[in-house]
Image 1 (tube, rainbow, N blue to C red):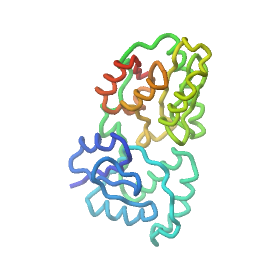
Image 2: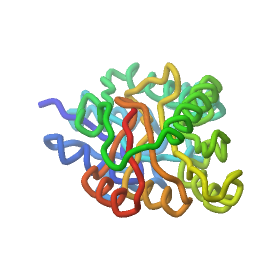
Image 3: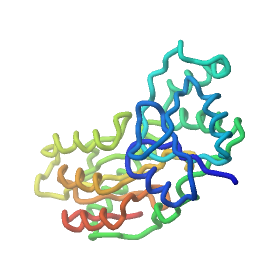
Length: 264
């Protein structure tokens, strides 16, 4: 019987995907433990890990959850994985999308099909609509401006999010991620030109041309909490391109905080 392996990172996505699969194999990069039992592996021993997946009956792989770039130990490479060293090291020095594309290529060359969240759990990737609240005309303008910024930066493989308030960019997402970006916005919330004016919008979207089987941006209850603490008016995202985790709790928390949620 064929099985799906979840290459799990931190956060709620991997458990959510696992609940939708029959007898999945759970694996995670060493040092990035998901909140569930799993088999750890290292990039330095990637080929033996492929062998292990095959022995478990795995023929399909999906990536789920947040993972930071691991620190590689040149002395830890096994002889078979050593032939991949130039590719792995080169990938680790590129942007997130380029690095993940190379990782996916390695899995595919080993004979595994790579599936995205939208294929396994399409209900986690909302279509267009307003889930909570009502964005104002100023919010719509700010979301449009933020979308332009993320699209422009995405061509440089930099990030998947931006915060715009009153037409001004307060922050963009870089390697530290959305949480760090929103912490920055909270710290500098007095930078808005009009303190009593429109509060601003967090925008999330995949990078242009991104392989949507991997690294889709996500939002959830923690995102809403941070948006509220940063004094923003809402969250908008590209419909069909962002994972919504724990949807009921996220909407309930947004409603309580007076934050709109808009799949645009």
